[in-house]
Length: 357
Image (cartoon, rainbow, N blue to C red; front, side, top):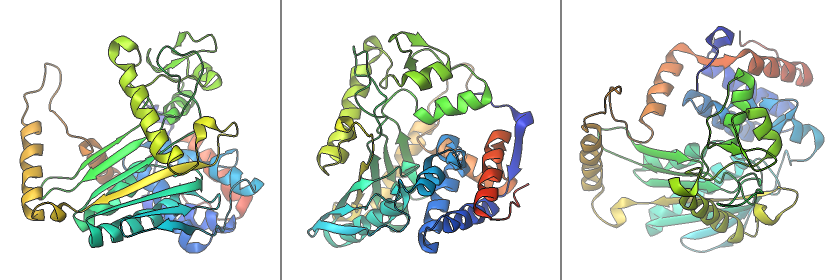
């Protein structure tokens, strides 16, 4: 999606982390939790996943609004409900999903070191931001990381008129030796809901196949799509395989919702949410060095594919995001004027100096 570059300002990512972290603290979040949440949001912007970054950090919606209104617990008592050698269920106490997710992934990694595989689910949580953040926590341990979450109802089943489940993203992060890791982070509908918000801010139309209007007809107007809350499963139509996206979305709902007892698809309030995090130690199956060497070979084979006319290269999952992160870490994160306006409003509300421009 094209962006309005004239309305963009480059912001240093470290300054942005400090500003968001201090603002969370002013909203009553403990310092360590505030730092985690800020890192999750800014990591999303660094990787170019602008729909899940600080675009959501403003007084009118999401985290700031929830904390201000008391709709989300600032100092949650995150506790283990059930646990064995390789699994656990956490209760997030209606706290930020970023904090519960970070803790759950740490537990999953620890269990994988001991048992080869660790699976940790979370119930009674809130929005956790970018899925890739949690999966990628496993990479420094030479492990495969998994993260997924259910979400509020705004996706219609194939052949359906009304929304019955969420965008329900899923992410796998897989280490390699010399190549960049393979990181597949995807919503199970055609386009994440945040892309509608981004299109509205940029004044852009959305492609056909993303969403329906309130009459269950295709629309390219992001405002109409936001109001209707009828996004299409991955594939868009039955002819293009939407039944597969529909099935994947419900599978995530089962693993994150039914398995944890937090089924947003059956909850009229659309909150709280459930998550699943996993870590797999390849060395439990074969020598880690051999595994990573084969990952290198696989990635190189894919990237060596001749591109079609009009394209310069073939990518693997996560490659564009890694390159974007490197460029933005050096030059700054481009933020739209409307996003900066929201950050200034947070500054005024909580009393943290605004020093981003």
